[in-house]
Image 1 (cartoon, rainbow, N blue to C red):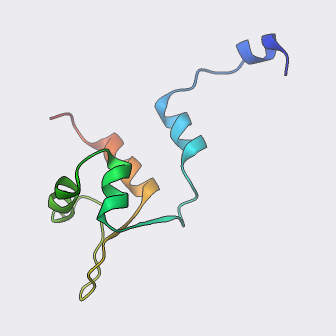
Image 2 (cartoon, one colour; image 1 turned 45 degrees about the horizontal axis):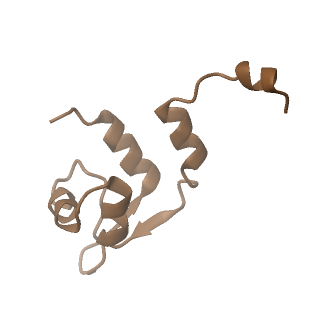
Length: 83
């Protein structure tokens, strides 16, 4: 790729970067440690957020493990208002 080809590319914003780096929607994050790491928060914060039905962290009834889809978490983060 030539240098001037790079100058013609649109800027890489956070949404385009997520689209490049985010695995397909079928990729799941299993367990609170992985979910917390993806969100950039502590495990305790991820556990607290999981209690809120608006947060896309799932825990099937009778199961001990949490799971989440990275694409759903990113969409939720984009829509979240700053605290």
